[in-house]
Length: 330
Image (cartoon, rainbow, N blue to C red; front, side, top):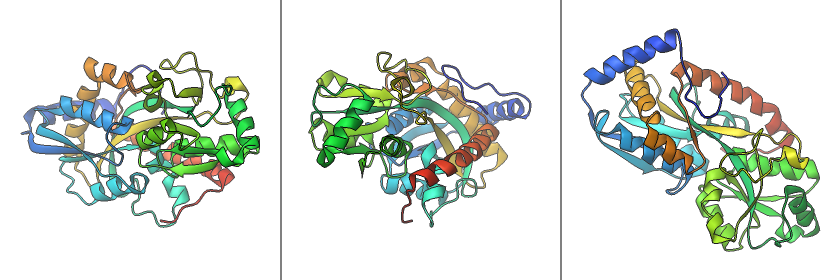
């Protein structure tokens, strides 16, 4: 499956039938007293924002109350591990970035979950690009990614960057930038992008690699500069910022998607109902516009499409992880 920007994924055939069944189940089922959306990242970031926007639209038909729980830690693993142990009745839904599903299996020898065994794919939720930003610790004369890399090489004491988690896509983007330029960029892992941005604003870390929306909301401070974006073309959320490719930085073009998943062994009826509810929520104008303020492009998919996307991206990241040489203790 190819994810395209600025529209919702359309489904046909079996996917359309599933959606039809889901709408029927959605209409007939009684709402949960309380439904929960679980994210592994801190409040205020893009993951949390997505959950809260969607939660507001799942009430009251899917759940009389829909709450968001931030179960942070271990780069998102705590949230996944928690959800895999919950009943597969549709009342508990995981929201997660792609890296937890497609990169972590390559870097953790003892990952406490198998993405396609312990979870049931539900739908893609959105897509976004990453930005690479610097703060007060980097001279104002540094205005591009190559200039930052040159500065970092000349000032190894300040050659560092933060990301929302070790083993995440933004972590590897920073690692690839340094590796390809022959610069030893030291990585600092945070529990989400917002804590990293606070350290960037305070001058405690030189740069941050993270979702574009997590960075743009801090531009008004005047202390943050986005040097480059990771997409194949410029982000509509930062149109004046050139891509890495435009700046001569090769092989660091990556976007990411967020998805919703259920615990394993959810019945077809539960999956269909939850998928229909999510698609309806993600198609609402206020959700689309609200996500856009955080640099997120709303979209949806069938469970089968998400399953194939997980498999495809897991295979894509295998050689990249090998090139970087990063491993983590499970």
